[in-house]
Amino acid sequence: MKAARGKTKNQLALIEEWASESIPSTRYQGSKAKLVNWIWECTKDFEFDTVLDIFGGTGVVAYMYKRKGKTVFYNDYLRSNYLVGLSLIENNTVRLTNDDLERLLRWQPDQDYNDFISKTFKDIYYTDEENRWLDMVVQNMPRLGDRYKKALAFNALFQACLVKRPFNLFHRKNLYIRLANVSRSFGNKATWDKPFAEHFCNFVYEVNGLVYDNGRNNKALNLEGFDIEGDFDLVYVDPPYTSRAGVTVDYLQFYHFLEGLALYETWDRHIDYRSKHLCFKRRDNPWNDPERIRHAFRKLLERFRDSIIVVSYREDGIPSVAEIVEYLEALGKKVTVETLGYKYVLSNNRTMEVLVIGV
Image: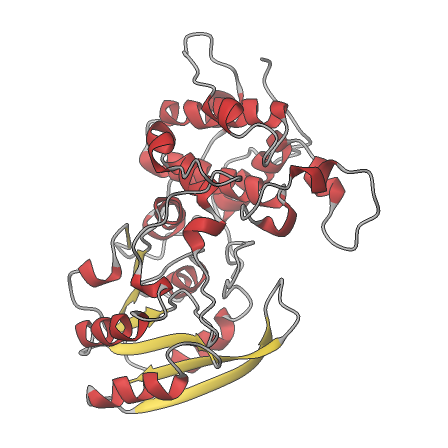
């Protein structure tokens, strides 16, 4: 296979400086990308130096606090999200180079390639050619050596995978939506059909540009929130959302393909082969259980009772905003509630975004 090339312009150039207040672009459901300025305005007047983002997800909030000069600890229990945090929160200086891209985008004659994606996910998410490309690139990752370079490459790869998916999700077997020659009221077929390599190089350019040294020793963690050790001035809590009707957002199931890329060598062990779209086996997670989520909240808030606690929430969740206020007041916190009307992507309803702050 020849090197895959797209319209990369100057994308492969090593960027030494990045002066803007950019944040990582993201296509994740529930991302706070458009809310980070509001979150900063609601918290900037508190005295704090260290920040823990327990459910780090896309990393946009952690990255905002990093740009503001705080020492940031990013955490997420998904390995794929952890790699995003490693690339942009813990990493202060390392970037990908032209040579790194060459290593990733060329079929290496000395490499014995596995064709796991090609065999397992045929006709589910991507075309045969795209599956072969993914098998190649993910197995070329070890050639980068440096863990921050690998994390940056995975970050770019995840974003490339998302833009080529209808709804930016892996929740059903629906490659046919991309390939059908019909008129559509959603999506962008030109984006779906653009070669993976071109998307990937564009996102490498983006993540390279976001690498930022704030002069602090920031850290990315891959733990359950209850297992995080240490003390932090401010703790930001943005847990998976469960509606009053008991409908929950399970990020592992929505983005299991990205988690599989991050766990390529053991991917087959995690798959639920009974599902049509070959999602991951479900993990025990109290944050996705309407019967256990209240206890999880109380336990987590108790663990960080000595910190400023900022809970990012929606007005119609389980537990209710009033319950969260009660939990914090029971810990002796002075509580304020900030609200902002907001409409999420893929949602037809405008909801009230809420910050419950306990000091």
